[in-house]
Image (cartoon, rainbow, N blue to C red; front, top):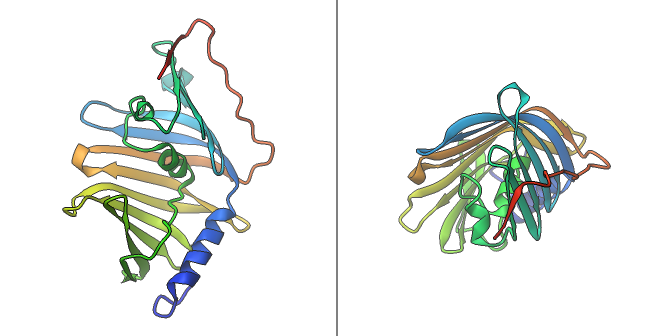
Length: 230
């Protein structure tokens, strides 16, 4: 465990970056839950992820009924809704991507949420101190305040918060139940909350394999599905 009273920022950043860089891919399954004023529910899922830019998620409803597919890459997203037999596709850097998922996460944030990784920004933090036995860092990022809680033993970001200029909490993420494979590690449970909008997404892996070789990102969409390009 790092000495929280005598660890310079440069050392902490290097160790955290090195730790997260050990995770190259993961494959898992479990349950994902959505809660919002408009929509609430739980679905089984299986996922495949390759850092830094590829994610494939299959969602299933009760009795194994296929309800959707999500594919993300650096320059393309595909969201298939089997209940409506419609597929949405476009560039994940545009606002259209956020309009087809039930929570306010960018492409990078969604990919990192499934991996349980929240990367530290460049530059010097406005605050670097120890809180409740963990390292606490606060950065100014795109006009907001981004806060990171780092476990000194795990060397991972276990809590991430984003606040507006008034200090109002916009997003809060927590990562728990670590799984390790050699030097690579990832949490089995990731919870992301949006307090102002009363939204929450919870990802809980019941099976999780790290650094899987020859991971496949193949998927199929019915030929008669309505395609909407955004």
